[in-house]
Image (cartoon, rainbow over all chains, first blue to last red):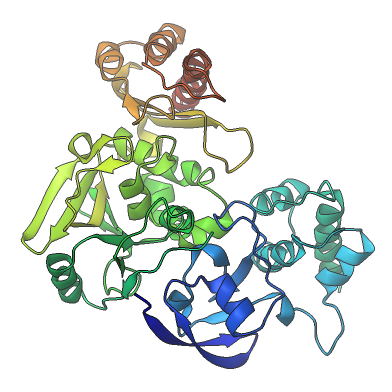
Length: 159
Length: 292
């Protein structure tokens, strides 16, 4: 039993097509078939948030969605944040505020906050903490991550 | 781990879906996948056929139908939470959704999927129990409807036959908020978004005379299914919404035959059942505009 399908999707603005087993989840498809290894796979049961990507504008767990379900969709991953090698403001703020240490959770944190700050441009600290409640970080104690998000919100407001 | 191999089907129409339900054996229906996908990744579940409902036309959407609010089974939790119809007609559901997983799981998770999976501490089935929601079931041999009491048969078990699908859920709102309606929801989990150890919801309609016209209280996470405190509810009709009324519901909640597990003992669950019930009922009384 090895059903396969050909999947076509838009990844960070570029059209991509690849064949995959139907049982493959979106995170593994991105990493193995499209060689976009920025998305990390942690728990594989929807708890850690490391695999968070944005599908058709909404943040989702890429380990809890089959690749075949993303056929025809627009997918944004951490590779799409930087422009011409320059970090996005959110990425730069993570660096400045020590919002990462080992970096394993960082792609999921960034994509969760990327989507969140579009929806809530001027959040309170409580709202930021609630937004990342579905992403686990074992290094930072979250302080630097929250500080980075609030810094970006403030500087975007001032810009 | 990774899901075991399966045959994948993604029907586009209701007719195609019913054809598959009639024809396939050993199948699982995939809605939002926020419970089924982890179970498949762990290989707790390994169906021969996976039938994906996500591309079937007409399974989503929120609408007012007469005195009821109808949800297509595939309506995303995120859409339910953002709905003005829900915020106005079923405000307790809007609040309870804050506790359903996280934003990433609400993007995919559906109202119907939650009501079919039936985790003991799931919020949406508990709210369905409060409203005695109606479940619309379809299958190759026709459609039928059941009320909540006949829908939720036990731990993780609904009334769905293997060849049936949940198509919609209907809730009948109580009085409008400005006409003496109150509601309260409270749950305790170790971290935000975790499965609740215990939670409670309460709806109340208060009469012009300031007495309880109608009340419903549900406790979740304590027994294998959400427990409605029906005897205590019935005894309170006509009573004042005061501390004595709250105490009667708390007493009923603490008498539930609670589950036990290595992390949470039955004794602790029962104590917590009393605390969450007290807070939910108090919030409902306060919101009804009656202060005593």
